[in-house]
Length: 378
Image: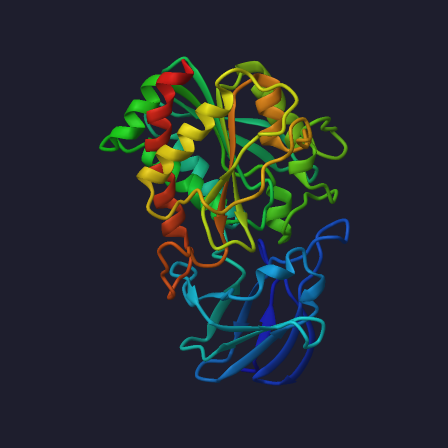
């Protein structure tokens, strides 16, 4: 069988520039709608069992986050269950930025991705499975531009409205792995933190806000080329129906706590970004955010508070971003959780770097931190 490369599947993205030989390929990443962003790749190498294959992804100096390539390692899997790192090297001065991945597959099929994928089919499996759990309910908030559902899961008997949502940026798949871990913990009767949270709050959970971008293999945008996390000030049905549907539901329930789950391409850390620059800070609002962050650092050894994004200047926050919009709109505690595509510098695991299992574990720690904060939000 000749060696082949394909990406014509759910969340796939790669283009073949040229095939120098059966074991030497030059590739490039297709851009998101709008032609601005690219960084996510996901493809399958077939027919290369036992062959030392070199894969060169070129043109990466123009990617969304070129600073994210040094120190990064591509993820590989033969069974699409266990993902490990491949030998990976970035050269800024070669072919406008080249990421070289070297693999010798032990199987006929090898899957290669920017991070462990979370395909749309797994999303549907997740929401269907969780909707059957005791105390859970599910509904569709609206449809994406391509007609895909924006799924919402709800659980909890308390009065405090909590919203947790992920994958505004579809290529940040660790965000939905986090949501899977969060949902599984909330359904686990042995998880004391989950029981406390369910007793104090009503949780509204959106595992994937951008199903079109996820299916198309995009990094940051939806089908219209909109970066959803810049659309929260004035979302339109033509450009960002996904945001419009979620924000309308939030207006119906109110929001006391909101967590927007993401991945950061460059920083090898887990960290929180807040809402320091919003126009109307309420008394105690930032202090409660800081207490949540401090509690998360206590519960999660792989979370830290020393490195992150610089806070916005007073009154200069971008209200098109969900965390700022919600903190301003509801006077709530809102936060953006960022996880790395690289390894976690505080506790490295070179064989996998940051991984689905670690993202799911961080979700359980986040529940514990939320349980600590909820008495202040009632």
